[in-house]
Image (cartoon, rainbow, N blue to C red):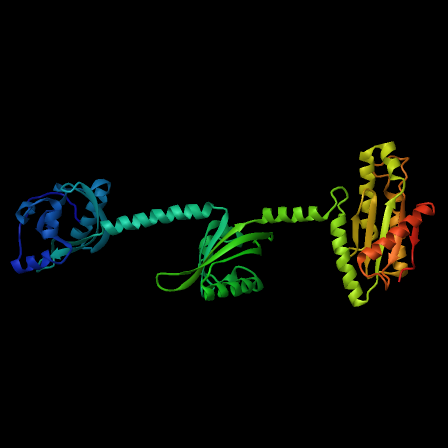
Length: 435
């Protein structure tokens, strides 16, 4: 609408047919003189300014006689003066408090100068459209978006939208941090521009299946973030169609890296001996049975060393169980040091150990057994009493044609071990000859 200062009105009404037309255009139409006093107002303006007002009631009066222009008054007056004094055409949003209705209304107004036959400015003409409902809806949508963005940017999950053209339509702040870029730089970019092509292609192959099926997909995913950290996510991906009919995907990925690490640690603990860190008895026998079957199928050698620490009860009785535990841990370190990464060391009992040597036989197996037997002497000084002597008896066997399963191999290794103890301990007995 309009706002200006006050001077006596010139007063004019125009032809009746034109007034009827202007009353039906669905917009607020008005004219003023150079002082901002009404010289015309159509029916919508009159109804807005007050109940039962007629044109004669507003002619010669200013807009501010009916309306509070609020804190933006100076700005509105300056806007009107730019039309009246400088001949500018303006188009802008205006908000007024209407006395007659007791509410604030928002308008989109276009104002142009009125000129006489000589071109001199005699006033202005304004056309205003009430956009209050639209403005309120926009404000509500803006507030809802702000609230939604606040929620999505602060949840502990990656939220994103991706179109069927592989371009991102949305990414929340956690997702942006994973990619190492501001969220506004992610929108519109291809997935292959934000992650290694091979990784992007793998995700895209999955996305295509979801788009084709139209079904929700749930899975665990692994991704290396911008900092090079390997992260694990539990992802829910839902197909979605935009109001325009464009297919897209909405993804929500929750970081389960810590949970994944805990799961792996629990699995490791289930496989490992808590004192020595070697494989425990159950895991050893499971792995050994699988290796036995593999080596048997491919005609490969397989050797097994059964170990018992000599006089270990005396170590516990003389030095105490904490020293005994330390001795066991050091012996486990000896085993790991003496074998390959592909060999399997295990603590199978209190002071009993086993070492499985896949694809090893003959003298190589004997050399490994001797390395294990002699290393404890080099390590026992690390935190152990100076008078402690740590030795072991070892029984060594190789897979034989009549060994039908790993248990048969293990029983023969146990017999070789007892032979070593019977022969005076601190020695390796190979029985029968390793193949």
